Image (cartoon, rainbow over all chains, first blue to last red; front, side):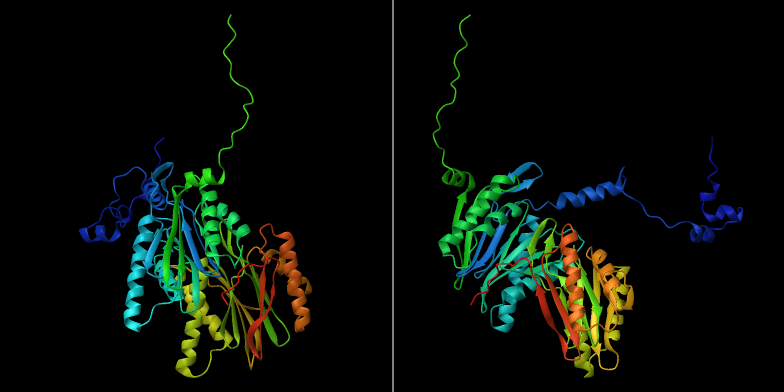
Length: 273
Length: 204
């Protein structure tokens, strides 16, 4: 059965043939060429999803009596494939401020570098260092202006300024939170558990570093997208220093050494027929 | 989800909001202040997408301040409400802001007032209003127990009743709330209702 589709044709045919060139241009439906692709909308969505990884990482930072501890794992994953075990996820913005990387590696690296430039320009223009509040606000405003365009950044800005230690969480949706304890990434719920239960404001630097290391280790143990090396940094009044970088596999055997257990049952040869 | 609700009493208006900052299943913070002091006699309680909430409310606050600096007198609550709605409406068809707002203010001639401003730029002057999943519980509580010209004590009682109801009936109920009040003496924080204390100790 042939359907009568004459109603869908553009207006000139309704006017019964008396069409000149001008009329055809005026009345034809506006159109543009689409790429030759079977599923244009689906392709668009896939492209965006590919660029926007699910923040497969574990990073954490917290303020304590002596300053700020910042820690992260070092695994980069693309779906089920581990593309690298040695990614630097703690970015040095300037000698007294650190940023963590979660989300798109390129986005984090680029925008942190850009933030470093803006902080230096602020220093030169105002003859004083920028505060952590100011730096995080700069980054948050930049990310907010790119909202909805596919940036994937989940970062913490940690530093020491005139007011003492400062820690802010900033993400690509435009959110900015001031706090004393944050963890970001797919392994963050695991890290939060260990971090929250072991946290005390008046820890020593060594205790704080060990807490951070332990939290990252436990997150890498349970989360497939986190692993590699647990790096721990400390930010104090004189700037930041790297405290340690331990392979989490080695940490596992350090925390849970192999205990020789009695053999329950030994496999014996089958009795001769 | 974020709950904001408010009501108008006898010579005052109050706005209560939850204080949790949430990302999918994680609670990043449970003492985030979502009720902003716009100027000496105005409160803006906002709920919605994280970036939009902070950025849009700050934008409104700075513009309110700018008007006061330029003209020497502050804006009325009605003027701020209409300005806010206008900004939301203009952005709606281009780059919408996903924020729901309750604006409370006190003007000498009009007295206390409360404005309900939706994310699609709805504007209503109301006696009581609520946003978020908590609104399902708060609105009926307020409808039942509210009457015009409530005293401060009665109003706080009603707010506490709403908070209790939200805590006991909402599956992902926020643990902590902040209550702010505005009257002839200005806008200020009235109280926090905390059931979980965040171990945030600031440096001495």
